[in-house]
Image 1 (spheres, rainbow, N blue to C red):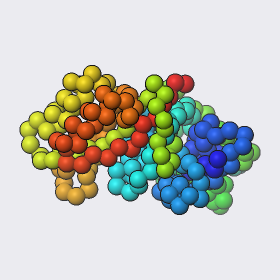
Image 2: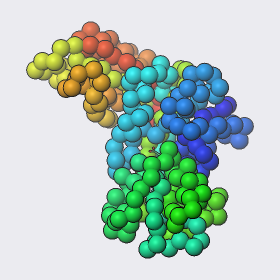
Image 3: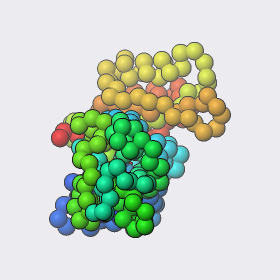
Image 4: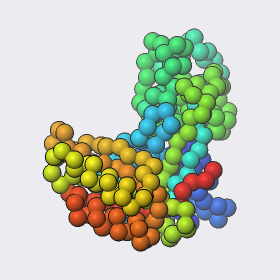
Length: 274
Ligand SMILES: O=C(O)C(=O)C[C@]1(C(=O)O)C=C[C@@H](O)C=C1
């Protein structure tokens, strides 16, 4: 099994990939999240891992937008991992002498409190991942630091200036595993999908959700994203309990297809159970 993830080695995505695969698996670090999708679509790899939701910051919009607009790949598994951020630099740099901070946008948002208090006037430079941020900081001639993972810091034998700078110690990110097909039913599954309303009128969303309520199907997530056509047009994303091949779920999805504008099923897969 070949698995693509957002690299370089040392990212949280690598950790999620290692937990997804086994000792026979091989792992391919990619430069960006869309590149992970392309690697699976072109069969360069069998599976791709993408972060979809964080307990502090909510949706990872790149992943949602790729699922909504760009790919026909399906979610075949989910995995949740704890997220700890470290401030890391070369040995001669101290917290009060940091001149520039390299960071991916998610860790920065998840560590807002620490940054405001301890690195208030330090300019940030955007990086494509936590591990990429460290590579760039270590190559910078200024007194640069990175928001990165413990694993990346240890691999690079770099100096950790501050530990666990995330706003909350319960910080966790949910990743999805993408493949050409979703998973077979296990009896403890969920289904992720999106739909749009056919017409923008009173009760349209209510009627769509009523289909699940009347079928006794629990919704574990709902959110909206811009449809990217007109201002005010939205796509609704929901996670429901059950597999799309279970008769009750299949019937509800059929009813939804009759009243919605578009419906796209991202996949059915086993619920993550720690
Ligand atoms: O940069 C990484 O290490 C990643 O795996 C990406 C990512 C994300 O984009 O959400 C994954 C988990 C954390 O929430 C922070 C960063």
